Image (cartoon, rainbow, N blue to C red; front, side, top):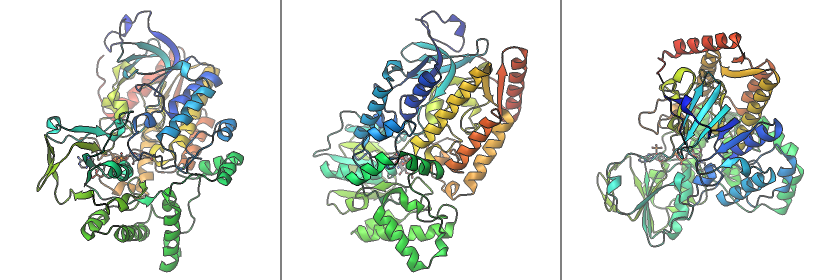
Length: 574
Ligand code: N01
C-alpha cells in the first residue's frame, strides 16, 4: 500500500479509503461528531483513534484516584433526552470505569463502533487543493481521503514528561499519569516518588499513599484544593436527574463554565467579613468547583480573590499537622482558580500519614534522576517508582504532533509558531474544511468539556449541512475575522486574573519553548455560544465560503494572501 507523503500525494493508489469526513479521536467529541455527521446529515464518516478502544482522555488517564471533577449529571451528553434519562450515574463525580461504561453505552446505542478504527495514529493530514480533499496518513500505513477533516483530539492529550537529566538511567519503573497502563500499577511495598501537584497529582497522591510503602511528593508550585465531597448519589437525586433533563440542560447552557450550578451574583465586598466567612464555609462543606461560584467577582478582582485565598490557606494550616509541611503546602503564589482549581479527596490529610513526605522544590530543586531515584540539590531520594503527574502539552500539542498542511503546503506548525491563531477555535485560515473541536481560542478547558464539545460538534455539523445544501465546496476562516477573534480572546483573558499566573498551562508555560499565549477563550461559554450562533445566522460571517469554479479560486487566493501577509510567514514548499 502506498502511503500519503507531502511530496507525492498523486501517487495514492486504490487502497485509499474515500470518505466525506474523517474524524480524528474517539472520545466524547469524536463519538458525537460521528453520530451527527453520519446519522443526521448522511455523510460517509470514519473515526480513527490512536488508542485500542474508545474513551479519549478516559482511555489514557486511568491513574490511581482519577475522577472527573465535573458533576456526573452534567458530564455527559444532553443531545438525546432518552439517553440522558436511561443512564444512571452512581456517584457525584464519575471515575474512568464508569465514564468508559457510559461511552460504551452511547457507542452501542448509536451503533458507532462500526465506523471507528482503533490503534490508528494519524501522522499527517495534507490538503490537496486540486481535489479539495484532505489526504490523511496513519502510522499503520493506511490512507484516507476526505472532504472534511475534523480534529477531535482532546485538549489535554499530549503527555508532558519533563526533560530531567538521567531519566534513562533510572533502574525502577516510571509512568506518566496521562499514559497509565490499563492493567494498573501495584504500589504495594514500593517507595514511590510523585512529581507534580496539579489536579492530577492532587487526586493521585492520597490513593498511592494507601498502598505504597513510602510516598514522596515533589512539589514545585503549591496549589489550592477544595474537597470534592464525592459520594454515592441518593435515589432522590437520581430521580431528580431523570426528571429534569431540560432544566439541567438550561442551566449548563446558561452558565459561563457549563456546570450545573449558577455563579452567585453577590460580589465579595457586598458582604461583611463575617458573612463572607459563612459563604466560604458553606461552599467548602458543599465541595467541588462550586467553591469558585461562591462569589461573582473571584476571578476578576484580585482583592476579592485574596479573601478566598486566605480562607483556603487557613484550611491547609488547619488540616496539616506538621507545621513546616503545612507552610510549604500553603505557600501558594497565585490567585485561587487562576490556574485550573483542583478538587480532592483527602489530599492535605494525606500529609498527616507517617509514610508520606512533601519535598518543596522551590527550596531544594531536582537536579537529576539517578539509577536509584531522584537527586535534589541537597538530598538523594531512593525510589522504586516515579510517577510523573506533570501535565500536558495542552490545547496545541496533539495537533502539532500531526504534520498538518493546508493550502500550498502551509504547515500548521509554522502558522502557530508564535502561538495558536484560530477563528472561534473552529478553523485556521489556509486550512479549508478542517474543523478543530474545542480548539484553542474556544472556551474548551474553561468549560465543562462535554458541554463545550456538544456545542462545537453541532455547530460544525450545521455548517457542513449548510455547505452541502448551498453547493458550497469549501469553508475557510478569513484572515481578518481570525485576527479580530485573536484580539478578542486576549481581551477576554485580560479581563480576568487568569493571564497573571505566569506558570499556567493555559499560557503554555509548562512546556519549555512553547510560546506564551493565553489559549482558551475566557469570555464564557454562554457568550461564546451566542457569538457562534450569530456568525451562523449571518451566513457564516468571517468564513470564506466558496462554490466551485473561478469565484472559489479567487476567494481562496485572497484569503491565503491576506493570511500570509498578516501572519508574516512564508509558504513552505511541499
Ligand atoms: O497537570 P498540571 P495535571 N519539575 O499541568 C508540575 C485536567 N484534569 O495533569 O505548577 C517539577 O496542572 C507542575 O508544577 P508547576 C485539568 O484541566 C482534569 O495535574 O509547573 N514539577 C504541576 O504541579 C487540569 O488542570 C481532571 O510549577 C513539575 C504539575 O507538574 C489538567 O488536566 C483531573 C515539572 C502539573 O500540573 C492538567 O492537570 C485531572 C518539573 N519539571 C486533571 N513539570 C478531571 O477530573 C511539571 N511539574 C476532569
